[in-house]
Amino acid sequence: MIGSQPSGWKMWKLLPGSSSRSRSGRSVNVDGNAGIVRLIDSPRRSPATQIEWQLISALKKVGPVSSANLVKTIAADLYAAELRKGAAVLDIGLFGERLFTRDIIRELQAGDGILWDIKQEKEPA
Image (tube, rainbow, N blue to C red; front, side, top):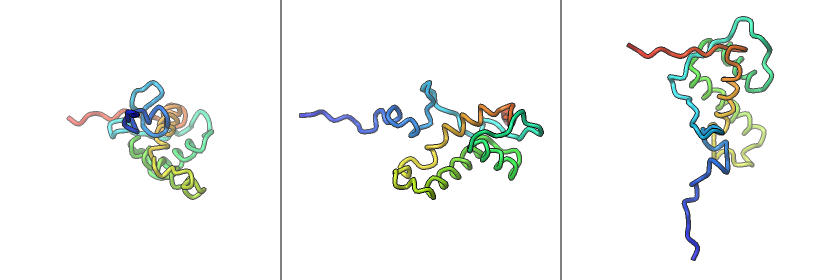
């Protein structure tokens, strides 16, 4: 008889986009205390990726916003765009918007001080 193991026991290793773990194994912080993102008046370079373009577009529309809300908004936009392109055939619906979260956070952190500034929120007194 073959012993069975839980089917999702190491799903994050098999499908790296299926969780918010980083390559180092630490979880990525996307909670509301992560910081406020603001566009830089004169950025050091122009956006180079689709995610950077979408981040800048969102920041131009709404102004300074919490990084958690920004990540959720861009993830929803990317997810919807992929579904329109036919990605539903690939079953990305199983993972939803979180499939894009890690890439968005990486781009957000890489552009800090170059395209936008991320300032930590102060704890309420």
